[in-house]
Length: 123
Image (cartoon, rainbow, N blue to C red; front, side, top):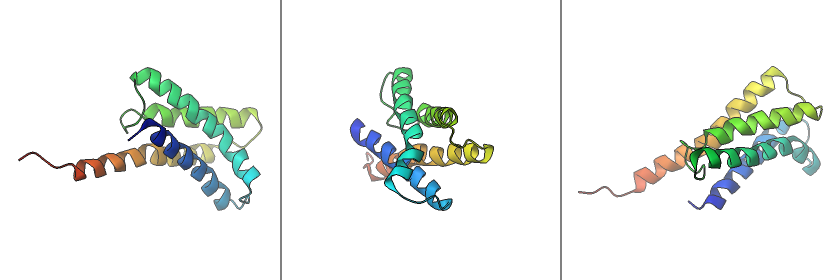
């Protein structure tokens, strides 16, 4: 899968995380509200991609190489939320960590499994 597609999927899933969070807490789904919730994690996602690329000496396109993207997305996102006065309650940190892990690692794992199942085996 092309790197830009993998990155775009990560961006979409990170925005989806923000939308789901806002909807579940009835904060409203305005474009400004979604942007306010998503931007710290989107910055974290970019930083995570940069760090993961340096660590792995390649792009974090597989579930095995994407764990730094997940961890750094959460870490930078929470730090930016803290510095900007947004909430960082312990429950939110836990839910964000688990949800972003499922989203950012999970889709790669599912895609990897699907690709393996669709690859013809040598006979």
